[in-house]
Image (cartoon, rainbow, N blue to C red; front, side, top):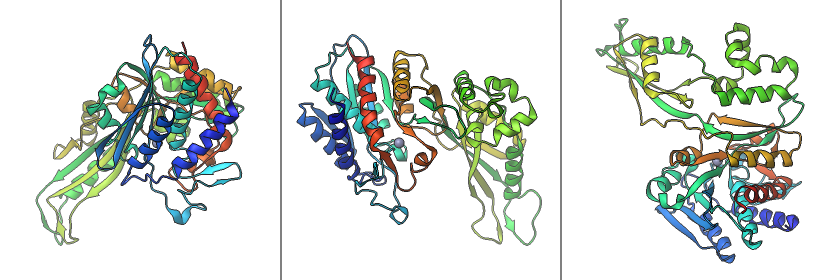
Length: 441
Ligand SMILES: [Zn+2]
């Protein structure tokens, strides 16, 4: 393979893709989809674009294998989040290259991955690599606003696009060296926590605020919220999460690594528990979380309202049961005049195995990209479109052959998002190697 040529091509395509403004809302992903369709057409690959609403486009193309094994869906989202130009030092849609970095909204999240997938697909087609799996290139709308016009639309209305597929590869996962660590940490995303919005509603007699009494609706609600915030939800360490921390212990200084190899036991120790929970990310990996986000009471300061309510954004781990969580909340608040109900249909979290053929191939590629890296399965605390495709029966993973430091990560959804040209070049090679390993005949 001509790695230099493919790297140049990927940088050029990514630059042009980043210059298409697909800020969601409104998304307007159709322009991005047409750009991708043109690139595919020039190589003789037919694609199909379907709009889920005017301007909200999803695209699919398939490079056929011999059908011996299940297909691989290479998916990315075309939309990006809003960029506040006042805080950027470059035009977020200018495609600027400076000091070895390509800048733009979507440089990491996630037009870069889409372009790596596209260029790798084209490279295999040009080289006429025989394939035992179909490669399905899928670009979706609306991931940044809930996926209703994108992945969920595809899953509900165009399930045929996924026909014969076994695996899905998408965003996140990266190679990072935590502060003080001896070696990089390369993560492959296997699962995501999902959100459960829970509403607590207290009701009571309304009245004039000049003569309050203890059991007004807002007073009851606040006491219930206090009990819930004080309660300790039991921890639950999934085997995959234990593996994540055990591997992390291998690269951390001994003081920080202590106890991570057996979390169930360590978390019974009060001092360890307190220290472990100061890291919000780590805390979220071992328990259902409850974030109070919305509060509603009276519309006037002098009226005691008949109703007061609050919404918790509760994040579930795989294996959590929404009914059990509601029951636990009711037990903790212990007030049957406070109603506890779901705000929307729960998204049950799912998980793909960290020992599939694809997972092993991704791990091997990441070790080639960063030879001393420790590869780990990761459970994301936020969620991506992979959740949707796992529900369709695919094993879905987040794979990012990018070497990043903390600062680069903070630019995602932040200011001056960028990707190093080195990551684009090496990323193309990683993707080609991955697809050859897993789909080459
Ligand atoms: Zn994303």
